[in-house]
Amino acid sequence: MSERALEDQLNITRAQSGDTAAFNALIRKYEVRAYQYAFRLTRNSEEASDIVAEAFVRIFNALHNFKGQSAFSTWMYRILTNCFLDIRKRERSRPSTSLESTLQTDDGEMERQIEDPGRTPHQELERNERESRMERAVSVLPEYQRAMIVMYHAEMMSYEDIAAALDLPIGTVKSRLNRARLSLREILVKDEELFRI
Image (cartoon, rainbow, N blue to C red; front, side, top):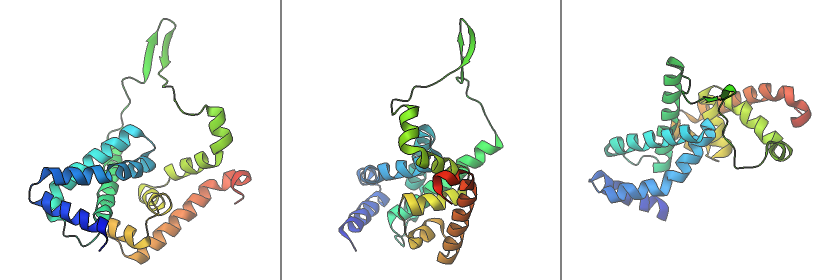
């Protein structure tokens, strides 16, 4: 067992005994990875933060059930994925519009726009056109396919880790990941000048 896994196991055992400092140590260790994964799934910082917050609440409430049969990070990815899917389900069942999406001005009503402190749209287009098209394509995949693509290609998780995180056989992970790639390819066919599909 690696030093990292031993440290996790010690913190988990202490947290299961009610030591909140040990649980806080687990959160500090994994919060950035959790947020990055959630952001890759949602492409929205607020939604990613909501998913991470909900996931850590679920982890806290279910930590006594954690038996260590998989790595803590694998268990965390499973919970994050479930939170993402649950939030998407809730959104579909009650679509909503932000009350702050429009702004009243002297000239009438206009859509609120938030300035992006990053690169200008022109710079973004020049430097990241391929990446942005890929992200858009990934975002329209069904949630399970999106999770598979992000876990494997962005999070660099192995088939075994994905199988453990989603509680699926490795063969199912491989076939679903292959289907997700085929779906992605079909979406990107229209951009063949960019991707040379």
